View (cartoon, rainbow, N blue to C red):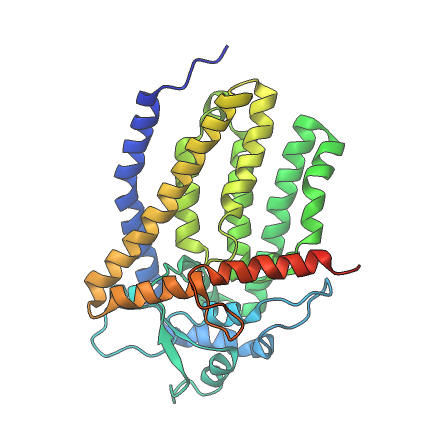
Length: 342
């Protein structure tokens, strides 16, 4: 019989998470600053070689669906707009300069010396995806980077499928993973700004599936780390995927281990896991707001609140003029999609 979950145990892991948060923040700043210190010329050359990939904001893909190339254009351009003569790598990492469209990115790739294309700053996000993308694009063309992303996504999918097959059989593995066929999986397979969330979610699920039962039973700190990684890498793509997929795997294995798997105990353990994930996610994101205000100064906080309100309320002609309207628009779009005939 598994021992009851104690407040002291949760408090100790919470204290460990609180101590780890500034360490993760420092590592994140260092990684981004190191990426921003890389010379832009090789990155521009490798993007220019495959500039045809940036022709359209939403091109069709191999599965017949469109992919969000607009976000990819913005993500691949992080750090490319020219900096001031005295701007440090840390300041550039926090400011996160980017080109505002695929067209602006193409214009810069065609004539980088002019530096006259529309650009802006994105200090409200961590943009951890740029820490890896800029390093990769310093040594390889964009299409090679996409090939690595594609094969990496297939590998993590296969590793989870194998773990479920090993422990629960082929039918269960197929039934669990088959629904992924119906999402727009092309984006997650070939676009780095989308795939990074895939890697976090499936990486967390693979960790849970392969951890020993004693460690898997209460993986609170692991969920904290998943929240931190989501805030650092994800660009509001599908952040809750990094919580829910590992949680589903945890629930399946907890039931198999007969540990905290029923009723109130299971619900309590899941709520604590979600709380640790939320602490990591919100904590690192708030740390970015503070970092931006300290490094950049000015009206950073007001711009941050404007961006938060835009994400909540929306800013399109069809939106209703009250808080939460953007969320309602998403629910209404889902309702129309479900009600439409096949």
